[in-house]
Length: 590
Ligand SMILES: Cc1cc2nc3c(=O)[nH]c(=O)nc-3n(C[C@H](O)[C@H](O)[C@H](O)COP(=O)(O)OP(=O)(O)OC[C@H]3O[C@@H](n4cnc5c(N)ncnc54)[C@H](O)[C@@H]3O)c2cc1C
Image 1: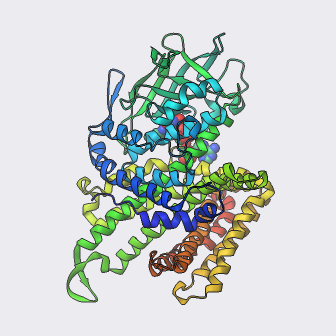
Image 2: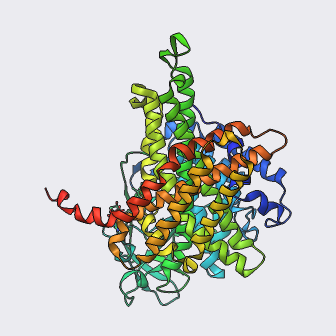
Image 3: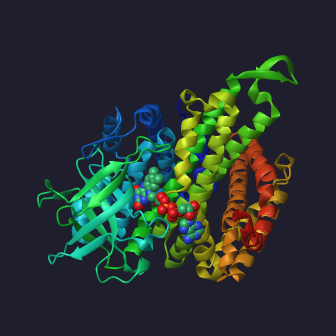
């Protein structure tokens, strides 16, 4: 089954749950109009459906091929990439100074979702290029910007992100790749990186690697890491490609999913060291890399939404066609969608996907506000909101992607387990998203240890205040169609508030981190449920009836009554995890 871009869902989530409509009306995006936004979304949906979606199965079946240091992408990949870049999609949110269109990150987020729904293995490469552009814009020297940004923004060259080494995964501070000062302002890098996405390929003539490495006199740990730009080919002064740099792909991995995305082991320094150029300051590389990682973390969250959406579409279509078992309404075998348990699975898939989408888009709008708001206070508050939501967007969306893709297989019954159906590919592709870009466990720890304390707890307090605001709005409309939505979301908000205070009081108590993952889920359930309620309330307000208010209310209600209802138990788990996890050590001893 192919992909249909869910433009109505995307538009509603973006404009009325994530806060894009008020931002647009308030002038955050200058003279950008809703018509332009809608036109961009429609075109992106068309490109994703018509050009990228057909690559998904062939990419999975044939995969990226490695021979003699070169990587060949599957048939159709190169043409699709060139068409995609030529249409300007790579530079949608990049600065106009460097050839981009300076459109909102939030609009780009919606497009990123569509690229990945159509074909996750394709979307991943450009997604890392976009994150690299952000890092270079924020921290690069004028010379580096002038030499690399125009070509990265146009998509003529692609980028990579190189952190991981065999002994340095979650613990980036353990990395050993060395950088020596060359005396002419450049550096020579040597070492090995593993698991590097699109480290080598045939889509572009040059590849721009952003590499973390350590200078000989650097302090230990993350305070001794610097970020370098290492091109595959060193450009000449006139911009043409010059000498081949001392960086190469040694091999690619055979993986569970995203087969067409080459995951490379990279080697630098066979011939005296790869030429690299410092981004930012020496030993301050983690701060620069965080610009790239935060953007990539949101994009990985969007991958989760994307794969969940595609799995959901496929399961829904199958459930309408497949006949099995009598239903209450008929003596004949009916479509499986009429069985309440199948409906439950499909509604769970849809509600989780929409909630994750709204959280990701809300994070993107906060990023836009952090750059574009009129005054410092507003920019800082928005930056804190974006920082708070980023781990939730990444981890919740990718966790639910796994759950939704698994349910997608379940809806198909035995056919879901058979590769030709395509449901299994979504499940295999989705699995990595909870692991890379910082595992979801690391995201939860980041949320609890670094994000809750932001602005002395004010950032999270404001997010909880927004949730209560929606609960009050639900009370005010007093529409019986919402059922227990207001009550369940109010309970979730209070559970989140109590769990937050408890965790803030535990600062320094490492054992409390056993509750980090349940806390992140609790946060996402309260927030996601609220954003779905915002969507439903907005749909009911839209005079033209275009948003099918009854369907939106039903979805928000399902989420609140069936999913957000777990918030209370999660609160309890957060508080009791430290004791129960640590006292259960013995259970792992056998
Ligand atoms: C397909 C693919 C593509 C990738 N692309 C890239 C890329 O482009 N660039 C790049 O640099 N890397 C990339 N990676 C690497 C990826 O980011 C790492 O695999 C990931 O960060 C986890 O590191 P690790 O594999 O060493 O696992 P480990 O760090 O060994 O973690 C193993 C388990 O222990 C847990 N854990 C570890 N430390 C802690 C802790 N302190 N507290 C609690 N739990 C902890 C983790 O959550 C995890 O569950 C890619 C990996 C894959 C498989």
